[in-house]
Each structure stands twice: as structure tokens, then as C-alpha cells.
Image (cartoon, rainbow, N blue to C red; front, side, top):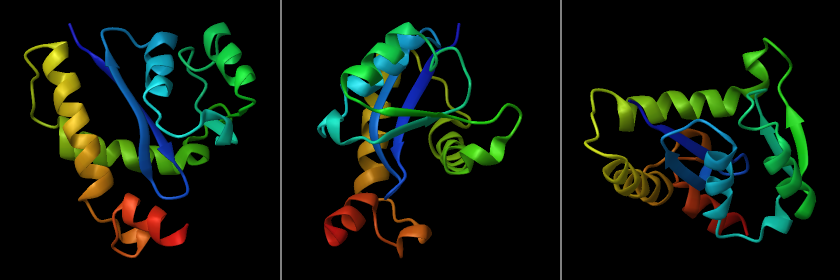
Length: 141
């Protein structure tokens, strides 16, 4: 039985601002990722996703309404609408998942937290002038 990961990426600086891992690819996985966001959710202007049912459902609709976050859905069959996320998922799979087996969901959650810290604070990004997402955010604010 596999597990699933949900990451929320800030398009401004490619920072992973929220994340979760769970046994099911569902609305609760997405909701749990939002629960880890340290920033004020009222400052999030847009939530862009593909058309998966884990993103478009009553639980997520209600959460977005509470925080007045607008929704943007990719056009059906158009992966280019979600190019940044697709690029980040490719990196994530290469750097974190490839060739690995996690002995438990708990191990996955612990190692995911470590990866997110590394990705945001240590890993440099060419698209950010070879700064980390946190360095880029701090420099531009």
C-alpha cells in the first residue's frame, strides 16, 4: 500500500509553504497541507491546481471561502497551466522519492519535513539567482 504527499508551492519564490503525507489522495490530505502553512492564510490570493477531486470538493471549497482564496483550475488536458508545479514535482521525485522505500507513514512524514526544510533553506535554485527560496523571500521583502 502506498502513501501520498501534498505540497503547496508559493509561485513567488518556489518555497514549499505547506505539506502533508497520508494514506489516501483526498481532500483531507490537501486540508492537512494547508494546516501546516505558517503564513496568514488570508494573504494567499490564489490556489491553482489541476482538476483532481482532492482539490475540487466541499471541504476545500469551504476552506478557500473562509480565507477568501480564489481558485484557479488548469484547463483539462493542459499540463502547461501547471508548469511550475510539474517542474517542482519532477525535482521532488528525483531528489526525495526515487529509489526510496519508507518503512511507515510516520517515517515518510519525518523525512518529508526534513526535505522541506532542506528545499526551502539550503537548496539553491537557478530561477532564484542561485538563492534558496527563504533567502529570495527575505531579500525581496
